Image (tube, rainbow, N blue to C red; front, side, top):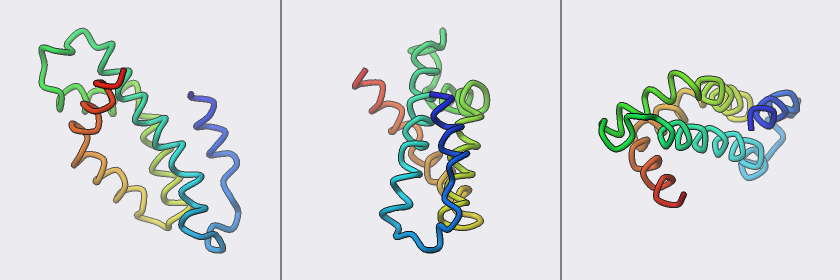
Length: 108
């Protein structure tokens, strides 16, 4: 997965301003998915899973094993949607992080 994120960053389109939002999402969604999967896997393998609040586990995962993926998702959003888009993506993720992680863990 890590190589996929790096490949996505290396192959950033040079002219995102000429792309439709739908085309931009073709580049951002896979990077988001890698990030979400990293968080779910980190939570699932955390020894505190089931005993600690899910929110704590999400924050730990984002700050530690998944930090590179979080940064990649922010960078890809900034590249395709403009400066500040990455922060908005991340803020929106954090608002729904527990429900997103919970849903992903149920499907594992």
